[in-house]
Length: 79
Image 1: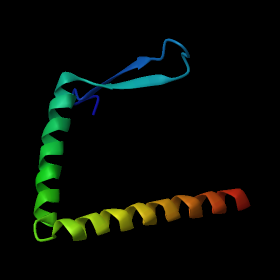
Image 2 (image 1 turned 30 degrees about the vertical axis):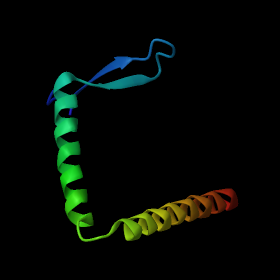
Image 3 (image 1 turned 45 degrees about the vertical axis):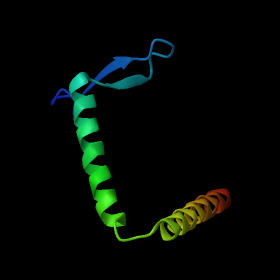
């Protein structure tokens, strides 16, 4: 990505051991384009789902994500 001019790197001024990765103007353009495409895909995928079902799907996915995080925390504590 750096070679393509999408990002640039610089040393972190507070801690020189770290490197900050920053989007260039070109990188921001590519990101915005990708976000538009992603929005079109989501709109197409969700086009036949009514609002109530979409809200239920969102609620269910949030619960699954929370359960997954809790499961990972439990596994990490055992390690």
